[in-house]
Image (cartoon, rainbow, N blue to C red; front, side, top):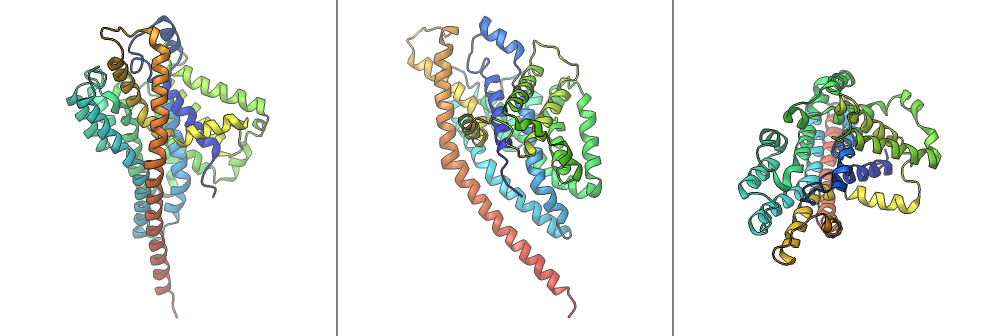
Length: 387
């Protein structure tokens, strides 16, 4: 099975760009203006998180579920699960923990502007993020205290919980897995999620991604390949329509449908389904494709670092500008340029010198564990074969 699907990486680029633009409002631009208010009244980039969820569900299940289903016995099943957890841990945790530490240090030593929030609130957020329960913490304090730059870890915690529980769900469900997943997805599509807790524990997009991965192994899957998207004009129109719809459905100024969370999940799932066919349907021009692939492969670093980049931008301008400067919409482009330089530069450094080397190390460790598992399984089968 081909490991990387370029269209999935491009979807990651769209997802992180939606989130990065969404969080500029009041985090980078601490002021409001008629132009910003008009833009954010029709733009809701929080939906990029749900696109990330659908991607994660698909990518993880595409590789993991067949391995789990092929495992011979409970011990072998646990070994497959452990290999998966080791690989994901090395892939995600070092960067996440490093930026949690940097956020905490910045709240203590680099907070003349107050952008980072109080040290106490940051300690709360950092501890819960490190324990992978940030979504429950954010739901608990939502509307009462400022969560700071580590606020975005709520979605990472939810994904980590998904990684822990998916193997158990596969083991318990067995051949009924698709039906169990459908049971978990469909009711959530019709939840209004009026409380913060319901909004921050949503798993419909994650499980929909798993369903797409399971369907990929069925003969009927090939019948639905959108071959018309081989036409560059049709592909461009589809991308603009679906990604634009994601942004609009999430906006506060547009009332499109009562169950907008469910619609976001369906749009994200449709994008992942199209990408799953690996037809190079997205971003056909070579230069644009290369740019989006760069963003997509660094999307994890961009997601971790965008909020620290915004707060650092505000801190730097406060320290560099003359005393008494009032920052307003006149500084929009200066703040934007500063934040982008910080975000792109720090993300590239993080990707090259931390994320990529440690990911490779995790793959190597997991590979040795997998080799031992296969050898043990072969020895067990040999021992059980009659002479």
